[in-house]
Length: 244
Image: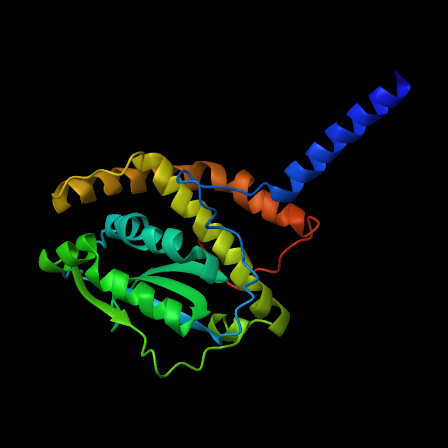
C-alpha cells in the first residue's frame, strides 16, 4: 500500500513538473507574442523599422484610431507568422507638427531574411493597401535591407540612458507593447471582416477611447505602482514636468 502511494505521488509530481516546464503564455490565437525568444540562429540580427506615415490635415487633432488598426490588423499577423524568429519587438507612436508628423512604427529585432518576409507581407497587406488608397496612410517607409548597422540590442534605445538601461529596455517596452495590443484585441473582439475602412476605423476609434479610459483610471496602480514595486518602492528623480 505504501509502495503504491509512493508511485502515485511520484507520478503526480512528474506530471506537475512536466506541466510547469512546457506551459507558455498565449494570446487569443494561441501564440505567444510577448516572450523574448533566444534564437539559436547564426544569422546576424538587426533592428528593423516599418514606419506608417499617416495623413494629418492642418488644424486638426491626430486621429490615433488608425494606429490601433495598423497594430491589430496589419502588424499582429506578422507577429503570429514570424514570432519564433523575432527576439524583440515594439510599437512607437508619435504625432508632432514636424517632418515626421503622425507616424506609427513597428520596430523589431531579427535577421535580414525574416525582415524581408515581413516587409513583403506588409506591402501586400489588404488593409494597409486600402489605407493608402483612401488617403489615411500617406506612405509606408521600410529600411534598406542591404544597409543596416543597428545590430546591437541597445542601438534603438535612448543614447542619453546608461548602457545598462539601454540594453535592458527593449524587453520592457516589448511587454508594454504586447499588453497594449492585447487590450486592443479584447476591445475589438473577433476581427471585423468588413471591407469598409470607415467602419473599421470607427470600431478602432471606440476601442481607443476605451483603452484611453483604462489608462487614465487604472494606470496609476496597475502600471505605475507595480513598476515602482519591482524597483523596491524607491523614489524617482523627476527632472522635468511630464505627462503620464
